[in-house]
Length: 304
Image (cartoon, rainbow, N blue to C red; front, side, top):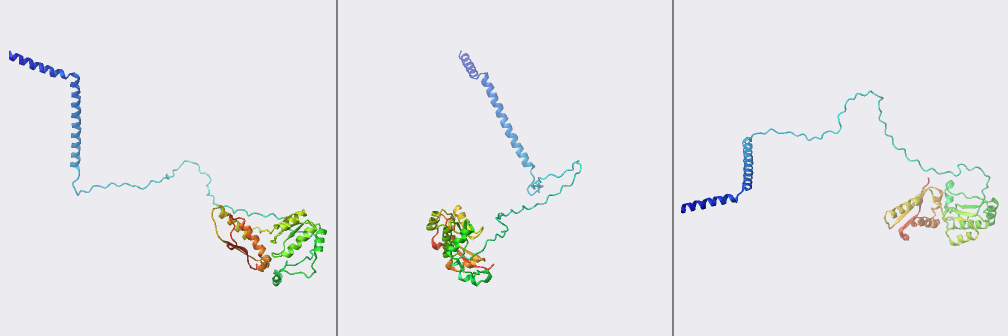
């Protein structure tokens, strides 16, 4: 009785154990087992390959043949290949030609040759128009005529009788009295004036008023050469300003070989000339320099 009950309990336990694992669980266990075996086999194969590589390595001290690698860059220009092309005329390399220099600016001549007009040259008034030292240079200086000088009435009559419309003043620098004399003659004769030298007339209010009252044009004062030291100085001053460069002092020394510079050897005649040139440069500055910080004027006469 007890043996039969024991067998029944054992059979029941076995049935319960099988009941806990159905067919699907058994298939999963089988797949995991196969995967584990594959992983183990892969590791065994890797270990075996490593051991074989170590066994095949040469013993220490054995020379191993070197492998040479050429790192020289390959040329990018392909080798010329013969082409089956009919020969043509030989091409010639054109010679390089330098660019021609720019053409200089051409001045327009107003009158190449002035024909004889029969206009007489008459004696005027000298006053301070000739510096004393100008007679010491012979033909290079001034040779004053021996004819008697004309009076103011005679000069006015000459201007009226000639039919002149404009008086052009080119008296030497420093001719203050002579310039004012001829300005009076122009006003009385009723002719316009172009003042080409630095005795200030057009820029003086009293003279400007007198010409305006007579309804006469006056242009001046002083004229500049086409290219000289003053225009170069002005251009440099303007360039400094536009480029943000400031300077505290400047000077300009002029030398020349004509009678204008010979005349200006007399320093007493330079006041208006220096003022004219200094104002021309000061006008290009953002802030005018002090009188002690700028010097512009003729320096010396060099015979040409």
